[in-house]
Image (cartoon, rainbow, N blue to C red; front, side):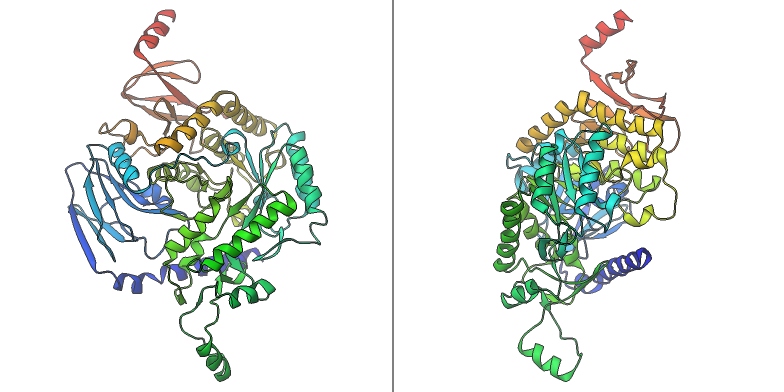
Length: 553
């Protein structure tokens, strides 16, 4: 069954790519932007973060897809320039110029002399921060997602046991996300009565234990449901652009009345809400409000916004990107929200999770550059997927790598958010479990106030919480550093992203105090030991304080 689901997902992703030809044919505006000496470019696609700054020969197409993650029609230069368009575009890079083409002309602005100045000007002009935060619980407590641990076996008794075990194992409560199959069917947003005999009592119990509860939601509707017929009558579903010829009678019928398009994805075939129709947003909002009123649900995990790129044959007033944007607007009603795909929603109080990662060191190394890309596209309130990986298929026959799990938890611990799914106490031995607890405790004791302060500041200024070294220390050779990050401007984090117990750290200029108390003068590389329980971080010290510390040594 799992192989079949993964095959379906692979076919679905391949079908997304097939749209590229006809979409490119529609483009009519081409702009050539000569590169400045020593200029580097970032932006557009979060899931291309590990390919940034972009290399000559790279080609990316926002019209054809968003790589299943957040996107923004924005490119940022290390020399203070930026490119913005109100519409998706295709772009490529050569040794001499940046080429941008699409259905609308792009703005090319010189906003200063650095990556930071380019971002701040672009954000203020096109996606200013609105002063609002998602629920502060996201930053102050861990998230517990039931996907990897329970998979398609979401049941009331198993969820309650999971919650009780979290506390018994010495972990704090936080946000508990109930994933796919809590519901009767897709679009039938009611607790399944067989798997959840008492959902209100369950949620009351979880609240009493200290958890807040979120439910997984997608903009899909089962074609065998009453809700499908209701939404079809309201013309709130994407419809087929060209009829399928199942029979002469069927063709005649749908020529008179277009039928909903069915999107094939890894769990079957579903109709999709068409947010170009006000009835679709009104219907989904009513379902979510009812869940809150009836069951005291706290919020929602909004998945599937990228699926709008699949049905190339579907007719709608909105491009797939704008469907994702309209879907994102719904989440603004609920402070407890999470999205995996977004378009032009920078500066808004929405939690943005990275695309599901495999349980592999290669995917672990993508967490930092993808989070850096999120911040530079205006999606400050980010979550680096799930600890150990969020791709269910990668936890099949292969043995779990305990070191990888620990290093993943350590990266999460000093990011804006920390999301568990697979239960660490079930898969880790004593030393590895202790290292995960140490990371969680470090976050709570040392970094929670800083992270929350940066999140509040970001809601006002739009500046990223997690920052690229090039963003904070421009033109000093840090543009390709993607295994370190800055928390604000004063804390450098250099976690382990490869197996082993030591690593090199590139220290920017200044005086730095490490987590182990060692003092360093910057502008150099150092090699440090990183035993299993250590998360290397360095605090930038004011000159006077650094001098005082030296005298005491």
